[in-house]
Each structure stands twice: as C-alpha cells, then as structure tokens.
Length: 312
Image (tube, rainbow, N blue to C red; front, side, top):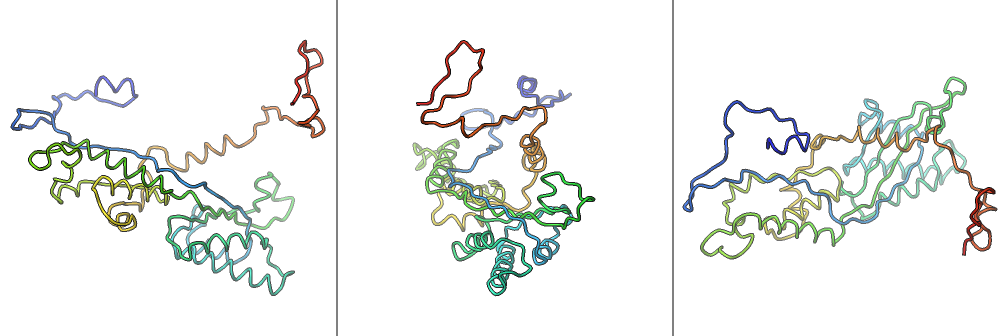
C-alpha cells in the first residue's frame, strides 16, 4: 500500500504500529487470507435510450410538482408506479379536454401529450425501472431562461420542463454478459476438497448460507443497472428462475446516492458548462448553396497554392 499510494494519489498516513497482515494457519501452513473483494460493474448491453421534452403550464402539473416536494430543489424525478400513474391520469384528462374544446385554455401541444400517453401506456403496467419523468421548475418560463430574456421587461409566466425518458433496457445479450461475469467471479474462490475438488467455482457454493449473507450487491435506480445486478447474482450463486425475484431479494437500490465519489449534481454542472457555447469560440456558418455534394466544389482560400477539393 505504501508503494502504490504515491502513484494513485491515495492519502496514506504511515502507521506507528506494524500492519495487521491477515495470516491464518491452515493444514498447508500459514498463508494470507482474502478478506473481501469489491467490484464496480457497469451495466450490460442495452437498447437505445430515448427522450422527449415538452413545456407544461397546466395547474395539474404544478399541483403534482408541489405534492411530491419539487419546490424544495426545483427538480423532481417521478419513477415509482403510483407517480407515473398520476402523470398518465393528468395526460388523459388534458387530452379529453382538448378533444371536447380544441380551442380551450390548454397550452400543451396535442402531439406531445399523445406521445407522453403512448409511452406511459407501454407494457400495460408500471414496473418502476424502465420509464421515468423529470420535472424542472422555471419561474420565468423555459424559453425565457434558455434565451436569457429579462423577466422584468416582459411579464412571463412560470412553467415546468417535462422530460420523459424510456428505453435503455437490458437486452438478452446484456443478461448473458452479466451471468457469465458472475460465473467468472465464482472461479476466484478455491474449489475445495472432496466432491468439490476439480470443479472451478464450486468452492463458493460450498459455503454455508450464513456466510453468503456477507455478499452485498448495490445498484442505482436505473432499470438496466438493477437487472444487470440481478443477472450477476444469478450467475455468481448459481440461482435458478427469473431475475425479478432475485432483484427483490438480493439487490439493494434504495437511497444509493453517494456510493461513488462523483455525485450527479457535480456531473450535471460540468455537462452544462461543456454544452454552453462560449463567446470566445468563433461560430462557423455554412451557406447551403456552397455545399452541393453532387457538383459544387468546397470553398477554399484564394491565396492557397492548393487546388480546390471536389466532392465526388
């Protein structure tokens, strides 16, 4: 550890006493004991992620935002089945009102509401792992906040930015990847003696059930991550059956914020800085008449000794 600490920038204070090396006596002599194995695993292969944004101003969405404490931080994530059902009920009511009175006071676009309703009605039920709705509060409207308008010059009404996310689910190949990784982890434990000798991975199965309780599996609230963790546990412990019961019994996914050093807030602020255009960077403008891929030549410097490149 003393040799690795300067290389990996790990804070290390030299202890005054000798290190407690885990040496245990065995029938083959004294040897070091493996105390724990910690693995950070990424989710398996997934389907493409999809996202839809829309600005909502109806009082029902504001009431939902206030009901779940969205005004405390200005942001709200709805993922539980009962929460998504509330969003679906509001969407159905608004579409019914728009059908009765097309020119009413509802400002939400019908196409966006139809897409929101269609995505929330997929699968016929809510499982809480494959869809989510995010709401962000803008006191002067989404458009004014993005364009930098002065709220004092123009009376702007508050609005919510609704972001619907779906897709990104674990594919069958992703499940196979996670199960194979779990079986590979089993081979790290000694095979044992007697009937278990010569069979890689059987040493872990030889452990008593009370020792298996030392196994802790944590996952984020993303469905693909939870299903990957369940498939990994199935391969590691040679379990049978579907992944859903394994997910419920073996994987912990509640209040998992802070497991890694980089939290989501700091990452989102960095992403916002990267996406914000800078005034120091010159903006490149293209003229459509100069970019005909069939016969037009690319624009070039008049003083350049090279001939203009052509698009073939």
